[in-house]
Length: 366
Image (cartoon, rainbow, N blue to C red):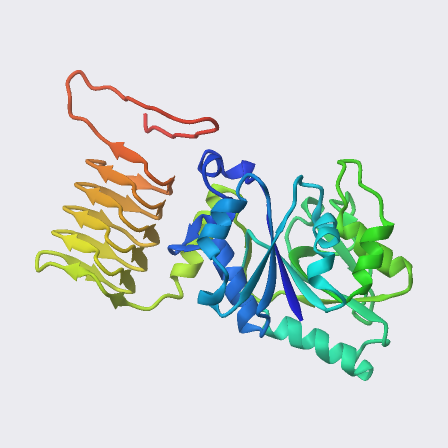
């Protein structure tokens, strides 16, 4: 079985961060989102992985992932010149995929559940029809229960557990089961993506391809997700995802903590980092070569490599690499990009000085 990870999206909902970085490289607990997907595939025994990239962010993603050997995988890079839909990604990956079964995974997805059970269930159903397959099982989709199914693609499932219909953002949802961005296909999906036409928005939709399979009499099975699932394409869900992942970390201090500092709970301090006259309360992650001085870092904060936090207090925030936070009395619920400087001046008369990029958002206390 092969893997196909889709990492070509522009990430417009995370601007201005994604003006200069791929959304799949934004870190969760100091690890790029994309890496979690690669590791999930390797854990499930899938080591031959194709990654779809765009002309805009592809070079950055390739530089971050390399040849995949550090993860125990072999990476094939597949360039999508234009964002023409998820099914189009399958179409252009045909040479890489061949006739093999494969998992397709959206590169900005974050799941609590691993892929091991999802993959083994598909293989069991295909090899043992008595477990619920008719013998024509060609796909399996991952679904999750949601409170507002009218905001998602929704699956209608029959009493036997087979998917009978997919509906995009229905006014009257047939179920509360929304599609998560994880799919399992055999080679029949290539017939489907070749048969469908672009949607009204000009894209080849994977939901249309799956519906084609159903209409042609093939079986599409489903699994219901265990645990949480988050689309990290916006700031608040990304911070929530960071919180959920930090809840799973173990304490590890590889950097220096001086005698005047307190590091409480499950905190990871990277090699070369220094905690000086400061308090860090976990769960939290401090990156390599980062300096925390005369500051308080509260729970659910991730500070990446080569940062400086001085004379400041922050909580529940994600700070990307090479950024400096100085003299800030209280920073909360924030996502700070790389090479950013946030400083507070005590000059009189008092005033706020800003230099912000396109699509920035800033909240000031009145």
